[in-house]
Image (cartoon, rainbow, N blue to C red):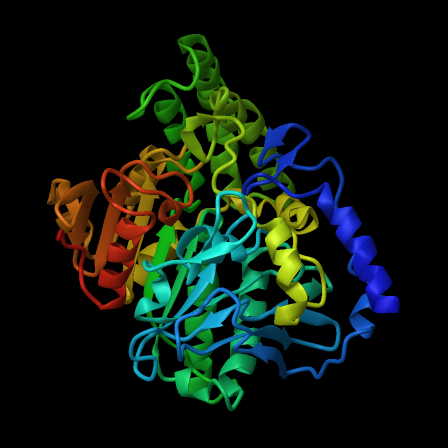
Length: 491
């Protein structure tokens, strides 16, 4: 009774707080900073106590029949209890590969925010099913990323999506620690031990550019692998081989000028008039302006310095240059109803998959914690360079209709990398990326590093179609090529 009452209260409180995209709007500013620190008010100790839990164990529902309907394909959804007070919705969902699951690699998918649910990737982008345009049901997805890999979609940090518990995470480093704890629980479970030695890929988008890059999840995982090998830490090592980040936030100092460039000239139409561009340019370049504040943040700046940089730059650069167009897909006016909302559908099936709390697209408390630490403005580029040099096959991809993390900024970041492949990359010219003969984008390869810009795609690249291609078809091709340990190639 107590649990049901609390769940009802939570659903009511969350209904008005769902954001239209992965990045929250604070005080009218996309990616803004709250005036005072957030305090969690809805997922409390009473709710946590109402659910049976065993720290270090999984609570799962197997083969629910929801989403993946391919005969014989295993799926599981549930919670990994990190501690007596923390739960992370561990694999909502885990889907075995449709082909050769006993030998296929393992992939972790992470959405952004920070604080947005990875169910966005599952239902709107590349999962075994896709939400219908009226948001009422799902249809099978023949271009699902689990065609050839075992994949799990993780709601994290604690409090995102269906996960719940103490919401104390405020940096990408802290999030990496929790994800490591969960993966140890997952790989020690008798049902999933067989995946411990598989090649592992971590893929994500948006703020996943922070989560997915080496400075955070990859760095922590590889550090723990080293500690396990020298005996200072007990655990299961993970065989990190692949990384992919779409429309990602990585290095603000190289990416923020992209807002100025893209707003003035992109493949479709200007977003604002020239006076707005000139005004934003002055605010970016002036003494003490956006450029100086990002630089100060990354020259040892405090949390307050970095948080102030996020507030200033997003208020005066990012937000006004969007004009009246949807920041995630500039071919639509704001707000674009596509991709369809998945809130009602997920809450209609949550008991069938064992979810303890109602689903929320984005958790503003998590976002606020990160905003207060200034995590947004801290660069991940130096250790992205390290992961590339370490031999992890890496793909950066971007949709050319996305403003919020546009290809101008992402390509400037990629061009500024200093890796063992950078000289080779700089000497390459973009080549057409074709999918079944359709020109779908532009790409470059250099060693085990690749970059591709996809035509006609917004922020969630696999959610879109282009030309005579189907939804997600181009993304399925580049994903399959990278996860086959191959460079990108046209078909």
